[in-house]
Length: 80
Image (cartoon, rainbow, N blue to C red; front, side, top):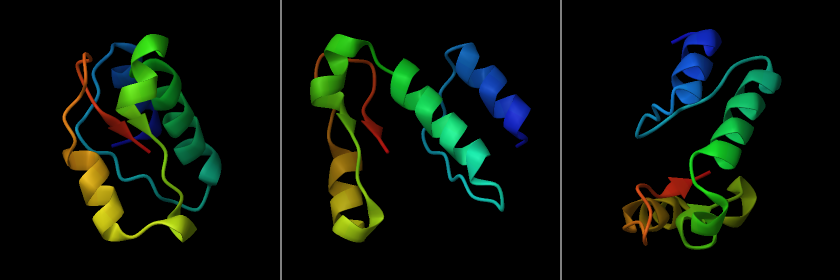
């Protein structure tokens, strides 16, 4: 998908289950990631349902465990 297509879907509130963002220009991935972090959940839902993991600090098992959690009083779980 193109950057514009992804942003258009996000603005409509249509979030895919998984995004794999990569490329030569990190601005695009950062923009999409920041948009999802700000808009996928309401502020009161983020404490329990949004997890940010950093590559140097985690393993693949940590990502799987975070992604398998069920949302708590929210429509979705967000793992960045």
